[in-house]
Image (cartoon, rainbow, N blue to C red; front, side, top):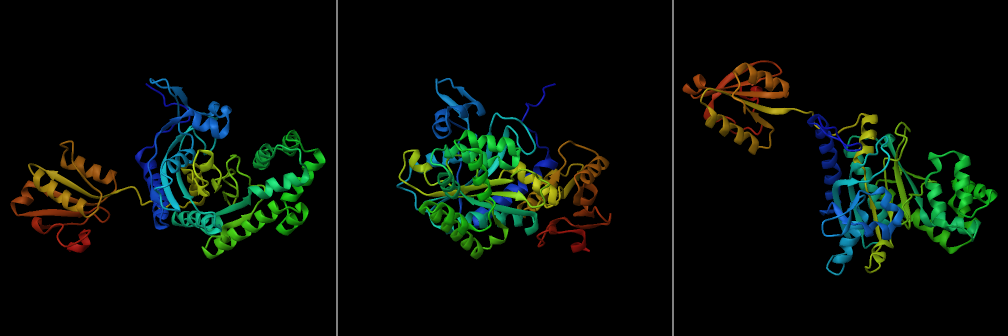
Length: 432
């Protein structure tokens, strides 16, 4: 017997149905905001990721040399791919460009809660707008999608920050510092002990006292204090931008979910402005559910014209943890609307009834194994069929079929030509 590969998973029907419902909700919400779906490849050139994140990123990739001698990798994230796509047709695309995509990704990393080597995300991005309204629309999309999945406002929060506030404060504390590495240390703040956190900061060029001073600044609730401390246009502009995004989010209905949290840094280097992460408000899901933010330099870095961009990527694995914790699912119960039971030489009539019901968007099953009447009834009960339509030779001699309600057990004969008739979803109660 073959064993499943570590970090990869199987999804049986009872697991796949709520996942499909989650995906449908995430995508339908995106469509309501005017995002268009794109499709993207499973393989990219390895250099695409090395150029963006450094050669060390290859240790986290599933990569290999293909039969044509090309170094390729299974895509670990979507942002570089869609950036490449924008660059390829930048002059043809109307701005802003609003795209979404749902697909699997692959990273060779340690398996842990909500994190697997194959994982699924719905990516939602806006290219071509630097306005605060674009950031706010991404936040509003997230809030609407989570609400559509059955979550209440008290179930989740968006911790919002700004990369230029962090970078500007670091520059104000010390001019001799590796800003990127310091921001990465901030991103790990809640996951590591204080001693390790301050050690990471000192490795970037800060003294211990400077590291403590910087850390204290991040806990303030008054953004004007940061502007006063830094005394730079960079921090002032970043604070103004963050406040404008939150003001727009209030108009878009998402401000109630947002909390200013300067400890939220997002570890990826390409973020440039407002960043945020979604968390379980109760803390039972200890890690970030998903995150996003602004990445204004990436398109230009890939050879395109300067193009501001902002996006988010809800991960299905961690989002499932939040939905399970909150007992919130928008999925319908796993079941079958109709089972069309065939007895004797009645296939053509049973098939016609099944087609008619499916054309009305119902879930319909029929016998595919030449089973007995009792075996078919047992199967119908096992798939939680709401109604069984019995097509038997004896009934057909009288031009009738039998409709049985599986919950009550009641049944009645009805004319075969009038079923399903004028009803969108005919049941026993409709026919009595």
